[in-house]
Image (cartoon, rainbow, N blue to C red; front, side, top):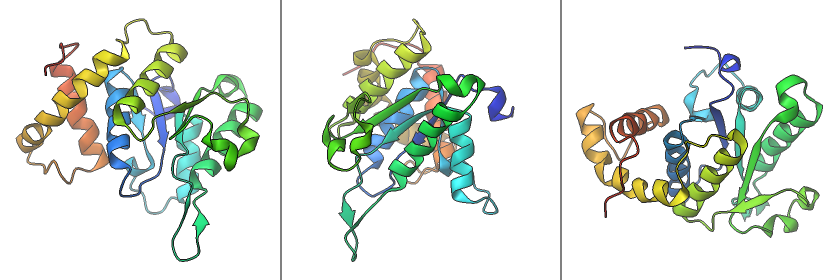
Length: 212
C-alpha cells in the first residue's frame, strides 16, 4: 500500500464521534465518500496500539482532506462535561491549513453539525466558517459530503446528491448478503471490512439507477 502522503488527493479523513447514536450518520458518510470515488480514512482503520491516538489522528489530518462533525459536544456523564475531541481535532486541521506549507495551504475541510448555526453556542471563534448541517439524517449527511467533494475536487463525474442518497438504501438492503459472501457478520463489521464491502458493491453497481 502506498504511503498516505503519496495519495493525498483521494484521502478523506472522518473526524467524528463514536457514541451509540452516531453510526447511521457515520455509515452514510463512509458510503458517500466511497461512492464519490474517494478513500475514507478513520482512526479506527489503524490498530497499532504502540501509536498514541492523537499522533495517529494528526497524521491522518496531515495527509487528507477532512470532515469534522461537531454534532456531539453536549455535556454527558457524571461530571456533566462537554466532549471536546471533535473541536480539538478540527483545531489541528485548521492549524495545519494556516501554518503548514505546500499543499497544506489549500487543505479542504467540511465542518458538520446538527444545525448550521448551533456552533455559535460553544465555539464562536468559528464564525465566518461555512458549516453544513445534517440534522441527524443520513441522507442530509450524504448530500453535504457529496456537494463538498464535488466543489473541492472539481470532479464533474461525481453524480448528484439525489442519485447517491437513492443508492444508499439499496446497498443497505444488500449488505447482509454481501457480508455473508465473505463470511462476515453485517451487524458487527469492522471499519475496514465495512469499507471493503462498500467498495465491492460500488464496483459491481457503478452508476446503477437506484431501485425503490
